[in-house]
Length: 399
Image (cartoon, one colour):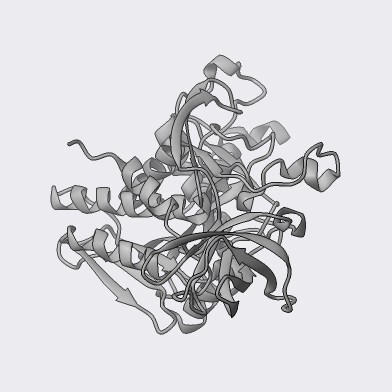
């Protein structure tokens, strides 16, 4: 059967996970590694994982290039077992309180038994972890503190439909794109680079860093950055799923993210990644004022701020790393369906959770962009060289 990265995408994005309880994702990453000689694994004291191309054939000159993604998603963790069918669940992640009212959840026990239940009210915990009372549909004597509960959502699927960015295309509707879709893209890109290197093609020293507990404040990333788990000269491309807006639509291609709501990322590295995107597309993200829309590249990508949230690139920049971000435009951010209307108070139905979704072509574009960065990531985006050339060619008009 031909290799299809969508299998890994579906598998990872339906894996129950929560901040501090990422063990199921970690186990699947371990099994993925078993079949791939030429990759090495290294864990730090905080449970973050580095996967790297093994030593051997010399790499391209330059520092290592990291693709980073986090292994958790907003979810519940059992805080207290009150009775055989009554639990207090701590919620780890950012979701509006409105979405918890009478919400259906699924408890995942240590032996992977699934038990459905319903949220019945608030628990005793407040920030940073709020807690909620849950009544299970059936009694159980195997539920334990630390078990994970997730939203009760329809089965994941990939369907073809009209895309917000225009045209038709496939969209994956699944439990947790954020950030497991990006994690799947990172693994797929590293695997392709592994194969290319084995075939004699030159690549950079590429590595993947998988972090824990991002959804409660980048805890794993902070630990890795404080300890210098990545070499200090590493060039870090953080991968995310970021809430889509009208000007950053699903289906518009992977987004080279210049910053988030708390910081602007490293300009030289952001420019370098954008340069790779231009090289693949054959042109910039958007047509210039002197071009027609028909001249836009067929391979689509976007360059945006994405100020709807914060990401780990800001953490790495703060600790002195050269870092930027590539993200997928995401629907139903943190499983909050109809979010814009709920925030505005214009929703006509009660807030309900829904499956997150991204466009398959955006996911495939992210993989292709990361492979391009692994093959040849320039030192900068070339702005300095262009400015120098402009001066040399046109400075005489000032005379």
